[in-house]
Image (cartoon, rainbow, N blue to C red; front, side, top):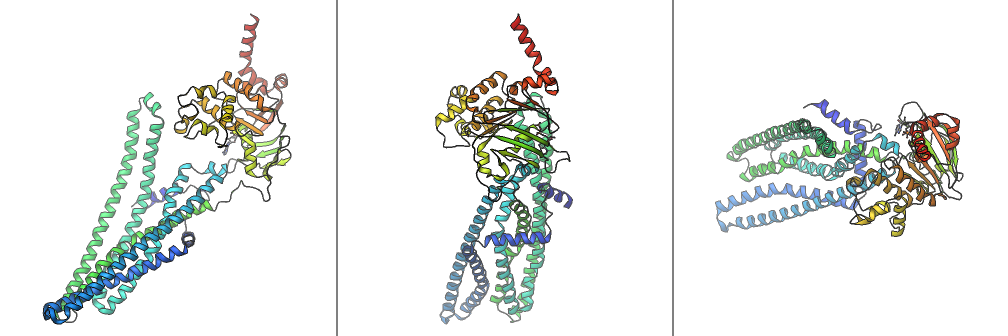
Length: 620
Ligand code: ADP
């Protein structure tokens, strides 16, 4: 098998830069931590282990009882039914029955409580995982792919969850069966005992190797299947593009290649499994043949009874299953160690955006937003700062327009106000309170951001608008929709406000989705409302109407409008022209036009031709 390929498959899934390659020491400490986690349910763990121990011990009685029964049956045949031998046989049969019943009962307890502990640990981990994801900062999400997080939350979590029942419990089961069983057999007859156990090392080795090989091919298969599903996902998502460009043949070929790769691996897995199962069967039956041969000779020589020989054979049959499962146990340890290391690395991450010690709620009095010499650099990005020396002040009721070429840092300014990222230098205050020192909860309630890519949940329009305030009254939802110029459209829909918007809001146009996002932000009545290029997909006329409708509410809040379209922000009280992360010009529309700088150049490009045409028309 190709070890390099499997390693690269593992690495690709392991995209957290700070997750070290799982070393032995790390793997071991992970397993210890998982074990400690399961011990949070001491009663269930104790019941599972005791039941496993009892089930295995009882199972060890079965070969002996069977052997005894066979000898007694021979006695009945030899000495006649009235000799008392039949009575003894009945008693042995009864004990055998009771022992088997009890063994079944304890196995049931072992399975039930083993699963219960696994599920409870899984449940706790899932909660911790989900909570962590909610609280990790944007810079974390910038680094880590969503697909990797989903894998972590589903597959890796499962690997950890199963560790108790498929790993730890098996240690006890195998330990008792092999350890105590071997002792009993060897004590009965050294040669036969060793022969009956002769298949154990080989089967244990092959089973472990098989399971580890199956595991690494499984990881590679996962990787290839994810390529397959990505091809399918892109094809379905871009179905219009595919059809429009008549690219079906190309797409089919792409799918074929991905499918072939997955199929080849699936075949290799079958080979590994079939080959090893046959080898294990062979070694088991060879050992059995040896026991029969030498045991048979001993029976003939009168050294042991037929019952004792049967005892050895039964014991081998009982032992072979758990020994074959040894590979599953090894696999469970390996899986829990890699999956657990990844998962715990995420759970241990320090939150970089969190409440400062002793943070108090933000108190809004006048609603003044101030940037004081703010500088910002993205973590891990190139050495250039995204923002330098940004200072401005906005009072409630004022609108600040931020304009500049793409990549100049406009959106970055927007992301700093709700603390999606923390400033690298300087500070941002609202009514004199440093936003880094107030509680995140109160800050995010006070700051609304309408983003360019409006995300809608697959639920009704009403629920989407009321997302930040699920208990809002209907009138309030409608008022927000009216301000966002969406109300008339909504009431024209057959189901009105209860219309469910499709997958990621696909059934609304880009402009309608943005207006819905605007309504959603208005619901919170934020003290600072930021439009991050959020009117780009809305036509100029609708945008004008939204602005007029919002002006009624705007007097209590600061509005930041970020846009590359001058018409969106030319009416602002103050306009900041940003370039390379610095404010290079500032003033009102008239002042900036008069200054004749970059803003003026942009105006000449975007609006002057339009203004002049209008002036000519009016003059004519
Ligand atoms: P604008 O909104 O003006 O188009 P941005 O604020 O989005 O500009 O980006 C400013 C600079 O920061 C750009 O050079 C951009 O490549 C970089 N940048 C933006 N977002 C990130 C991010 N999440 N990680 C690293 N760099 C980023």
